Amino acid sequence: MTRIFTLAPRENWICDRFLHEWNINNQDITTENIYESDILWLLAGWCWNQVPRQILQEKLVVLTIHHIVSEKFSEERVREFILRDQFVDLYHVPCMSAALKVKKLTDKPVIIQPFWANHSFRKIFRREGERVYP
Picture 1 (cartoon, rainbow, N blue to C red):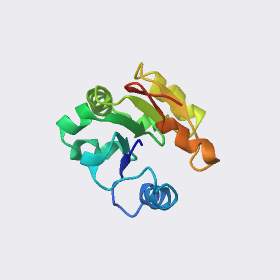
Picture 2 (cartoon, helix red, strand yellow; picture 1 turned 90 degrees about the vertical axis):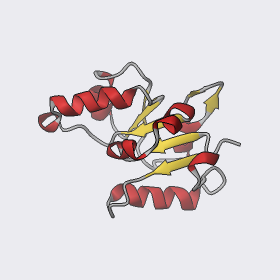
Picture 3 (spheres, helix red, strand yellow; picture 1 turned 30 degrees about the horizontal axis):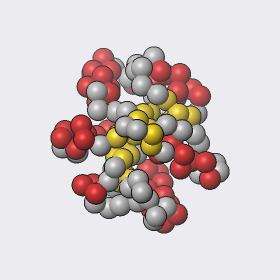
């Protein structure tokens, strides 16, 4: 069975609530040990550099981007996105506006799925071969 490790910022923010709810409702596929996981879900993109690069290279990486504020998306943030993009296999966004912005920055798959809208949220983590597909 596929095991998912989810990294959240631990900043007492909405991402931490998502992580808590996800863990409660998906105990069958969740692991708290990053080394036991098949998939690494980066629930807060700014935390990606807390993970050793070797793990980022070994795991299937799903990155959630909640939104991109164009006025705040500086050249430095674009460079960081491009650097991080080399480790990401799939992007998850909660809405079309975020998807359109992410698609301008990467050729990786972008899945639009609101949080907890229905039971189909889990399908973004299905594996087929070495890729993540909805």
